[in-house]
Image (cartoon, rainbow, N blue to C red; front, side):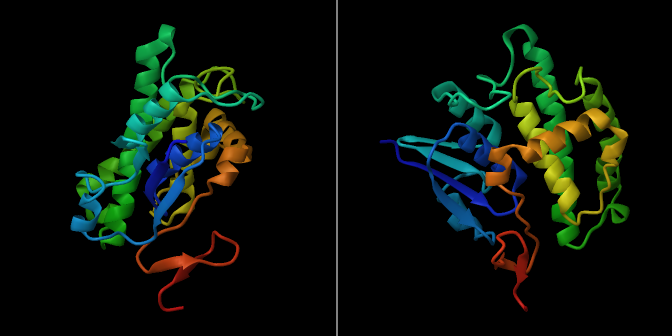
Length: 233
């Protein structure tokens, strides 16, 4: 039996993507969950990037969420029963570059959001930095373009399938909508994206891998599993 493990921080939307895919594939794994960020030397024992997630599968060790997901899809199949079914690859053969462009655009949105979040907790908000202002200004343009890539409301980016692009959008929008980073994406202006996010939040894999809160001072969670507990409480 394979020995699998996932190192992730509590609030990482990138890690949540991997958690959702592992759940979709019904794969058991050891949860190496960190609530607080360790020292650089400690993190370097798992990955030279000093970032999460990091995944182990027997002798295979991988970091970076996109690479981990690509490995999982290449080596494991989802059980039958879910509707729509999980896509078997990141990109469709007849739409390879378009699907990659969708994924890259979501990644750009995600990087901007997490950068804004990290800088805010360090004391710098959007209005304090020209760079963060540009990051925030990307959102309506990216969301408008992504809205146009969904052909039918109630479907995802790959009709009839649950794509990794869908999962990534759902996880990163969960971060944006539920964390105090100072961004209102006005998702109601983008009905196809809003419908997709709502559908994803009803899917069992998303419920099994909930949005977890993290900001400086959070040391754990209340009995409901989602309400943050702060150091001084």
